[in-house]
Structure formats: C-alpha cells, structure tokens
Image (cartoon, rainbow, N blue to C red; front, side, top):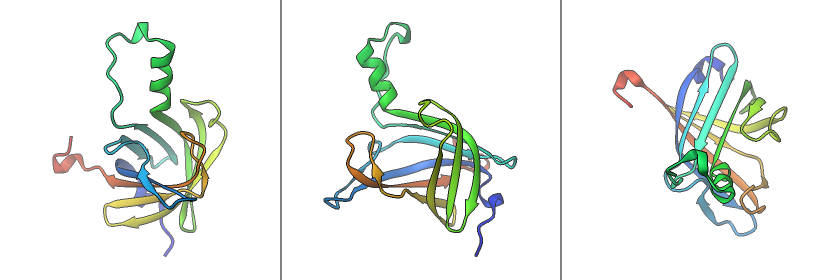
Length: 151
C-alpha cells in the first residue's frame, strides 16, 4: 500500500530514539532516556523538526555562556526545516535550513513504518556524530492530539 502524505500532516511528538551500534549490537538511547522532540508536516509539503536531548542543563544567563557551555548546548540539540516527499517505504527530508549549516542543502532518507497513531523512522547505517561508530537510529513519533487534552 502506497502511503499518502495526508496521513503525516500535523504534529508528532518524539516518544523514543534508540541507536543500535552495528559492530557490537548494543542498543542505547540516542538522545537520553526522555528526549524532547517535535516534528511537523504541513499540507504545503514543508516540514520542520526540533529535538533536545534529555538532561540538557538550564543555564542561568544565556548571554554569558562559556565556550564549553555553548558547545554542550549545540551538541545536545538539533533542528532543521525543508520539504519532504514519500517514496516506497521511506520518507525524504530535503533540508534548506538547519541549526548546523553542514546539513543545509542535504537530504535525509528514513525508512518509515506507520502503525496506528505512531510512525517509526529508521536510518540507514551511518557514523553517529557523538562517537563516530557505525549505527542505525530508530525514532518513534506519536501523533499529537490537542483535542484529546495533550499539552
């Protein structure tokens, strides 16, 4: 069955993100045990995503951060926006703006499985930015429903 874009339109909350390290088979949390993430797909073909790792520090004065504090914040967050398209069994994000300019102008393809109110994305193997180890990341997103009283 061909997945239609209309099914994805709306806002999705990140439920979990795990990483399988390929050389050992070890499965770890990609962005901590409770990452905070949102992805939105618009009917106009545009999308945006923000993900903050679990346990990010709440620093007192954002105007006086040290270089180390700034680097830690950069490494524990990502955001990008662009357009999207569905292919057989996958979704492609065409990134036109990003928190990290090295991603702008690139595309990210994810295997996609829709199951009820959840969508599961799985990456192709890649060198994970945190440690360079060849990994596959699985992200589980759940459809956000404000009408159901979610905050």
